[in-house]
Length: 332
Image 1 (cartoon, rainbow, N blue to C red):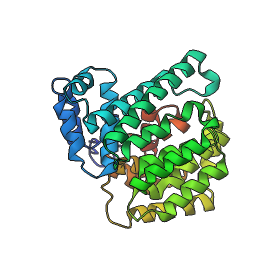
Image 2 (cartoon, one colour):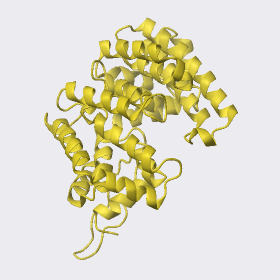
Image 3 (tube, rainbow, N blue to C red):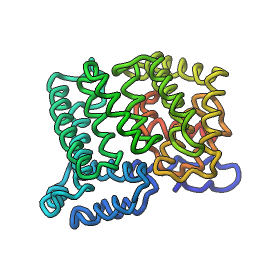
Image 4 (spheres, rainbow, N blue to C red):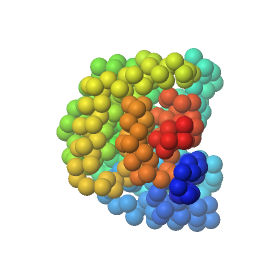
């Protein structure tokens, strides 16, 4: 939790930032910590999500980060080779390893060996995801890894990507993870254009029910656009200033305000990606020079810094979060 303010007139100290990908899902944190000794803890917390597909996807994603560095998933697969939850976690774990192999640097600073590792592990993730789909045909979560597995060579797989996206949406029409993968695929830095990216993000947000995370997809598209146009590569003070000017444009503010209003229209959001959405809004309000709104959003977030979009503009998630929290709270 953020530390409380001290006496009157004293400025707040920096926040106690929590970068754990499990965020405020305490049940998930506990299960992940137990999984090394007993894989059944991971199984139980995944299955406890039931048909809340976004929560299931988030839990699988967080557990894949832990499984990538441990052997408990191997033990689970030996004990229950046809368990759909184990199968989807294997796909996500291979996708996690693929992402690590590539790294987060732009293509110009990524080696041939990194690209090769990314491609090989993504191919393995795709095979594992297809098996998870065969074991649980109704589950949209393994389709997320099918989509991400096409990123190494997506330029030649546009039709295949569209088919997989359609299948995923048939199972969960407004799934956040599914749409985030698709919007990312269509952004200019991958295989699309600004126009295609915004087109998909806006169509999904317009169709999504109030309160769902998909209503905020146009905001993510604005982050991608600003980063690509004004702050590509290594963030610079000049680039950040240009991004701030972009987010202060009336038409940009109007669009993401409408998205935020729809996101809140169903009451306090409690879906699995609500904390990610709050981080997005805190960043948008900060870039737009809206101190009161930013502070209110940071107050909702507490210590849970998440989402790589902070790094788009400030070089790192923690630095970006703390830098803007300090501004919102009048520390700088």
